[in-house]
Image (cartoon, rainbow, N blue to C red; front, side):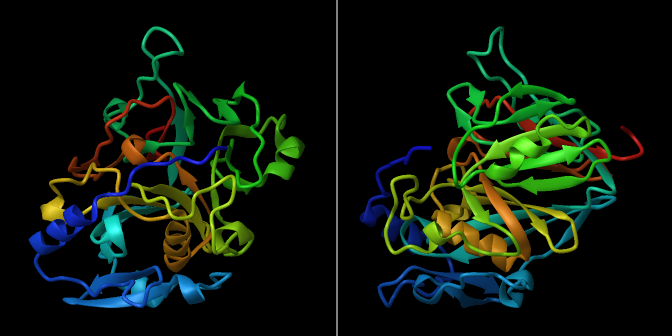
Length: 321
């Protein structure tokens, strides 16, 4: 795993975008430290500060969870949104949140290529019409996924090696498992592994613990703690449901929502913990991040990406597949 670097959004442009907004949130980092605020009921509430960030999320943060307006999409699938304010490029960030019950939907991995493995071709537009959820899965290196991939019970790629990686495993009964690197060998060849993908960095492990490297004061050789980007993450709630969170740049009424600006990795870990996850891992973000939710009435809510990817995750009502 290598560090990615991108030039920060120029300060003058950040200020211009801020001025273009309507009601301005508080400057979350006014004391010089990173912080996040959430909008609720016409006001802004700061709920996380890097200076005293928890080492473990033992429970959801009601300041955050009460800000989500949930909508039913299908049996066992809900989606909602919330607005965050952070520092720099995260001055305005919209978060789309989906939660689903694996016992009430059937989930599988999908892939697509143009002609050869050198040209990835999957996007949410390729999801079947009866899918209620679609998103990109894993991390990508060139045109291929990084790390372990099992599709329809068949291993396509061997496990990758990295201390901050997590494998998301779906068994033949549709149950999800969150597997750490040292545990993959024990289940790699089990016949009940229907699908699996590996991703990084791990955001939460065990029962809500933030990995120590994400609590460090400075970046390590493996991860840039200050890098901001559009983010996508997947995690498990304590009741067994799966939660997905996608961030979008939210200045100018969403006109620039595909811009690769957003939260840092520690901030994304905090968000997943505040939403109630006990374990979570990042998926490929930036211009790869994409999400679609389809309601039972056929209404579609789509947040496209700008990149075709090699691997996607799709979910269907259990009575259909």
